Image 1 (cartoon, protein in one colour):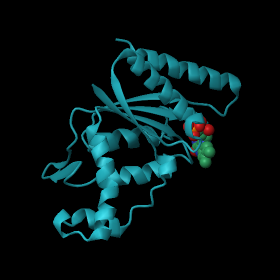
Image 2 (cartoon, protein in one colour; image 1 turned 45 degrees about the vertical axis):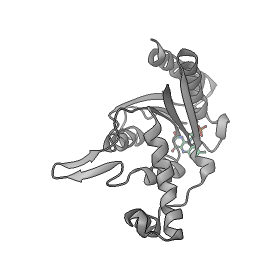
Image 3 (spheres, helix red, strand yellow; image 1 turned 180 degrees about the vertical axis):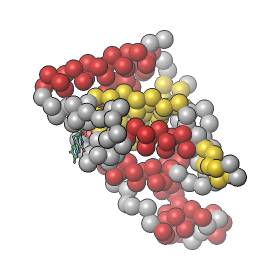
Image 4 (tube, helix red, strand yellow; image 1 turned 90 degrees about the horizontal axis):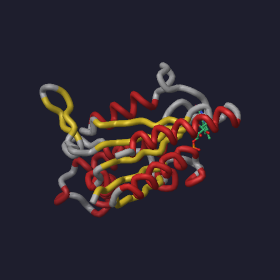
Length: 200
Ligand SMILES: Cc1cc2nc3c(=O)[nH]c(=O)nc-3n(C[C@H](O)[C@H](O)[C@H](O)COP(=O)(O)O)c2cc1C
């Protein structure tokens, strides 16, 4: 059975526009095939910024960690395990202040770990995750896709590629704060894209 890790990052929970389009996709794939969906809402997870202490805990061999270091390393270990267990990552991401939500960045900071999800080699970094894909559902108040101001698409593509996920697709709902007409058209375009991605 296919396992999907669905990561939500809207401040608006299920009512978020990014959540709505990601959930539309998840419902469609659930109807099409047997899937196990694990949902994570990083906005309510409220991870702290990554600290030096937490990073040092990762770098300390498990046998040498004290209780504090065990607890700190576990934050990332648990997240990495969830990512490793997934065949597909579904990411619902709003545009907040020209980038990804800071809660999502804090979550990504727990995923990118040298020797765990990527390694450095003489030829540069190599991702260690295999046989996974990512599908990103991006909601924006304005319109950015294809422009130099779309910081999210290259960043997310690079982040996933870096840890070994080269199959990265995007579904956009843009111009959501530009009037009802434009918003309705944006949701319709996202639905079309979802149909295209999920047709067998
Ligand atoms: C704190 C905050 C910052 C925002 N910054 C931007 C922005 O930089 N560019 C943009 O196009 N829209 C911006 N918006 C609008 C959101 O991208 C838009 O409302 C989107 O639908 C939010 O997705 P969500 O409902 O899944 O949270 C911002 C909204 C909020 C709440």
